[in-house]
Amino acid sequence: MQIGMWIDDEKPLPAVVDAVVDAERRGFARAWLGQRLGWDPLTAIAAVGDRAPRIGLGTAVVVTWSRHPLTLAAEALTAQAAVQGRLTLGIGPSHEPIVEGRYGLRWHRPGRHVEEHVDVLRPALRGEAVEVRGETVTAVGGLTAPGAPAPPLLLAAHGPRLLRLAGEKADGVITTWTDVRGVAEHVVPAVRAAAAGRSSHEPQVVVGVIATLTGDPDAARAHVAGAFGMAGDLPSYRRSLDQAGLAGPEDTILAGNEAQLEKAVRRFADAGATELQLCPVGPPAERARTVEFFGELASATA
Image (tube, one colour):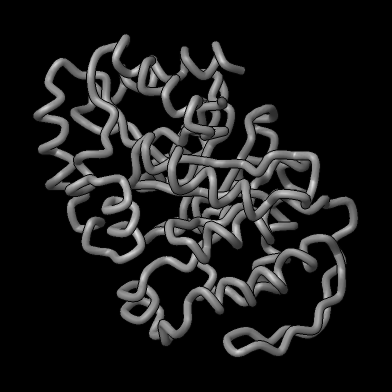
């Protein structure tokens, strides 16, 4: 199992690029950027270019509703060319309050929307012409991006329909706000079953985790409850938490000493995760120690 690094993008773009360079230096397998309130993740990845020439680069995630799949395919292939084939494209529908409140779009049949989006995006990334006239997506035409191979496509998923699509029509899944039990009992079986017979490669199972190397796990859990508690009110995340028998996001944190964190990482590997996506939390000194420790684990598993 590999270990990747979530990149904090709430800083000037040169600092974001520097953070990717630092993640490569520490031995992380991939650096992940998301579509939030600031920098566009694909453009930021293109800006990395050859500054960090070995580390994998991924989006976690690009929101499907805000980009037509042909537009997204063109953006992704452009970034793929800029980083010489190291892109992994993670996409997801986001959440109703964001789609309707921020983008002014109608949150209608999100499962159907994601499926139709992938039905356009996947072949478009391969340079194939598409003609899809669906309920939520219409796309006719194709792209020409010489020399840019199709990046692996991962789907953010928590419930059964999107987990099935992640295995059936994508290269795997990105999931979060769950624990080892949720990964072992719900995520991995659903994705692997849907991917059965498609190829000789196992689907990727990327699990986002919040973690801190700390002597005060209770304080860390309290911090997460305050900072991320609202995530537990979003239906898709609530589903993951409920399936795992967790009260809230604070119950997903990996918090403790080096031995405890290393044991937790091994349990995720045993559960079938192919990569942990680290999001360090806590006071600055704890975050720095956490990044250093997980970098050591990443180098050891490379």
